[in-house]
Image (cartoon, rainbow, N blue to C red; front, top):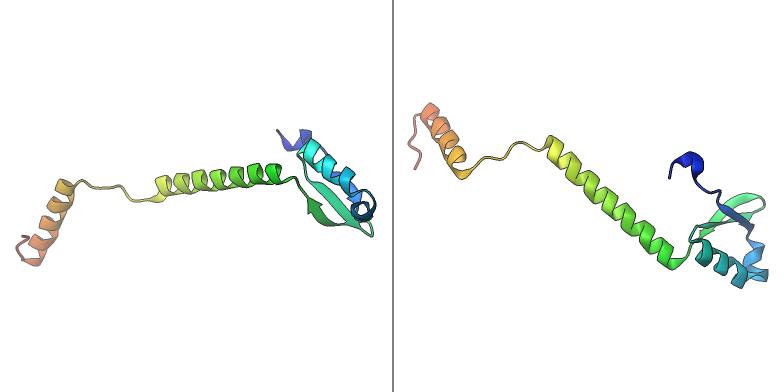
Amino acid sequence: MPASFAPLPAIRPITDLRTQLNDVCAQATETREPVVLTKNGAASYVLIDHDAYDEMSQRARTYLALREAEIEERYRPDTLSAEQSDAKMREIFALWGKDYA
């Protein structure tokens, strides 16, 4: 979902944890979105449903693994077959005047 269409986060005062804990937890579970808890009008904590957190963590791990594979594919040197490696070593040893066994 593009950032311009992302839902606004649920914002609640931290005192709701004391007075309406079940309601805050139900909101996090039903919406599967983080609930931002404020203290003196500033964001202080975030409450998120455990399953939603697991999904978010798994997506982040998957994204990082794919990104790492993409970077490795882009920047790793080309691999050589055993025959190509042996031929290259023979060339190097020949330049040194040595016999490659």
